[in-house]
Image (cartoon, rainbow, N blue to C red):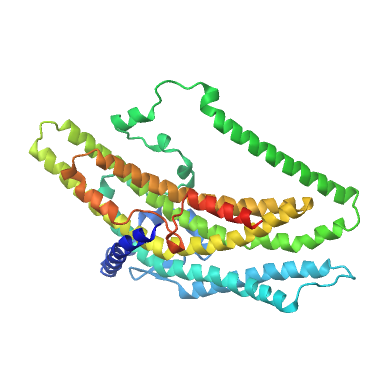
Length: 441
């Protein structure tokens, strides 16, 4: 994001954040009581239970208000801290166990102590900081989610509890052409090709990509099996000892990023909810658009009904937008900033090990998981912005006097996930991360 854009959006963002915070403070006791728990939570108890076990979701209803359980949050701190310390101790113990008698440590003691301090202190502190942020601001986020669910638009959307508040990660993978079940005639005409494509022309790029990746993976697997077989059945001098020396490093690179993988999926849970909101609200807008087109004679009663429906849409989007502001500022930015820093550090280390020696191909596994999770969060953020752009496109095709209020609400703060420094989280950021890792190697 350019500096000029930051200067323009910062005041609007701060004003929306202030307003959204004030609105949460005045939520009535009845609205936040147990029987009015948001559908987002009630319909996803399975996923919430997993997040609760891992310490990411430790908020409960207490006297009609959401509160974080401070005791359970503190216990979660201790469990995660000792789990990470146990991982380090396991790796260090294996290193000492497999160390040769004539081994000479060439690493300076102070440098080694500095890295030990970072692994035992800084990395767990990052994760504990994220747990604190999640459980501090989740009550506010859930109250605002309930405000959105109380709007007239949410009640008008058919099967809203099922299609919006029931989160399915599989749906996020579907292409827009398949999951958009209400498409107006103009957009449908632009999506269809002029004639049916010959199958090599249609699927040629996919076939080429799949073949090239398959060949690469096959060569890596063959090389890995070849080197392991040599070490096991015809070990050259020092090969077995070299493999044992690599075991502690592999354990740490495989286990250390697990908490940050979990935090990424926690963010994706809310990103998918926001994506479904924009998708279903756009479907409702298209339905209103068809009614406006059908009302060609300009009947006043129908016109007023359509304008009233669009005002309700603007009100619902305003509430959904305020939820996104809190999510972005308090959850997404911090999670992505910290997680990507850990991913980049470990990604450089894994790729360096892979190119260093043929027996290090096992590091492809943690490296693939790291890049895969970078891709996941970038893809979901990109999908959310695509839903937003589609909504703007539909509104631009409608009469301005009907939709100007809705457009103004959407343009206040688009649902663009931002990392620290205002970097947009999309495929361009994924490309930048890969380029940086490769350039370091």
